[in-house]
Image (cartoon, rainbow, N blue to C red; front, side):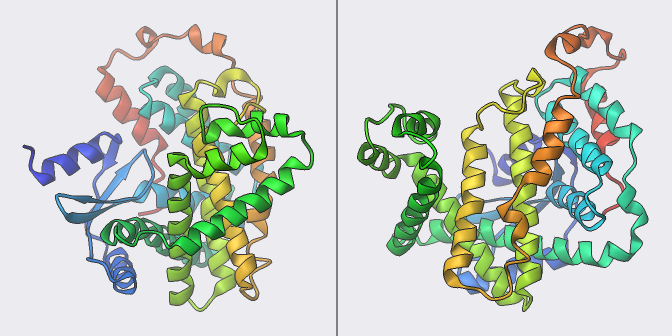
Length: 371
């Protein structure tokens, strides 16, 4: 039986570590405050920097843990800075190259990662000259940390109170949201066209009618997982709005975080399924990508139904992802086709061992301006 420390070390190492971080007092304070509000045991916080770029809360041998991955906040820092600086196209392109290159490292595709490393280093971020926006970015990062930590602790809360779990009323709310979102889409399609597009995200067999579709969705384990993610988003939103008396800024921060996470998931899914090099941005979204968009839309409906004041402007980006879609469509057409990369093999890489090449690539993508 492995000791707890070794299990956690392996869990982090699997993510392809950049380096491990020391204790961060501000994050510990946020965790403590959220746990008091949720009335759950405070987890041990494990700080790290990995290319997986996500936070993760879990119980291990009945003790709670929270893996706090600072690489996610680094990426959000860059994304937020681009937004405040006016969404410069070259800045977005540089961020895309970073995310693609690091994802290829995770997939052990070093030859392709080397290409994106070179493209990344050829560009500079224009937002680094915008010193006046620095305090706004830092405030947004603080708000996003609170929301993301609150979301993860929501999972611990569900696990801690397993007997009660997610309230039945919340299930009914998500069901109603799904009905609203479905009505918005299905009016442009026949049922057969709609079912062909959507059934695979929840079930294995295509339903014959709408009643079969809804029964299949609601009885699907994938749907149960989606509801839990939505509920934890709701918990993160509540904890943030109760702590900060700034709803507009808070919602704007959440919208930016969710839009970034959808971008990250799009790149991750495309690389995993080897679709990135098709030169075509119109292929179907993966399940994780589709669920990320659903979570964002359901959170928007949550805000609208609760009639929170002064948030419409702050949540505008969550309703329209056209900016990201436009940049992504433009960039993906510039990526070389599969045949171009097949001309380069790992034998053409510098004569170093794989670990050394991987470390060099990781360092190339490291953004040194945020600690």
